Length: 240
Image (tube, rainbow, N blue to C red; front, side, top):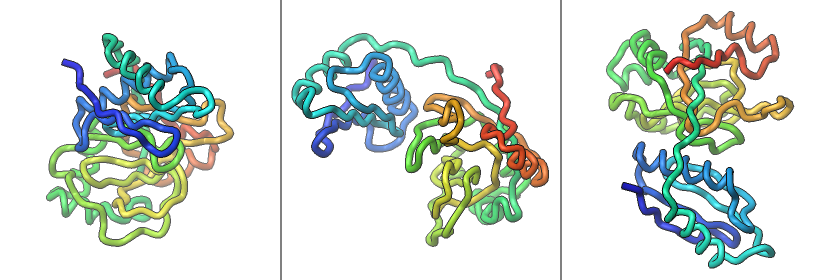
């Protein structure tokens, strides 16, 4: 059965199509599917579409259409049978964990009731889904992890983490795309740059992709960073 979303006004030039107010895989897939359909066949006056964890932002040109006309066209599109999502791409991403690369790994392991080694092994064995891009250009939210990863954000901010930092909170991983403060716990880092403005394709990942980390040493990650390839040793894998 198709999910019936709420359609809400947002600002002067946007609609929010909301499938859920709390995370669910079904709502996440529905948001990704709608965003893919709107990108492939834009509505009249549409200027931007962006999928969130359980919603879709749809912006429009106020000189080309009205909110009412856009909503009517959207409802017609929603009534049509859904199309399948594109086949996900699968990636293996080398990463190092702990020490200066992941200063909160021990804290996260304690909260999860695991050793640091066990926590890293579990993370590397988990195929993560790109749930959404947000907060910064190209920055992926990855999930979902097992229930014991349901740890809150820190009660303090790390003033700055660098691009490639792997952080966790609320059963998710955020792979930072730009320097930023954060309240998420840093576990490690990789040489993959989710946003590389000078690259032919600036966005390394897209919603629906699959990603697994594979453990590497800190010197190996440093060498990959020094090589300057924004993919940072990432391997495209067609194995599910």
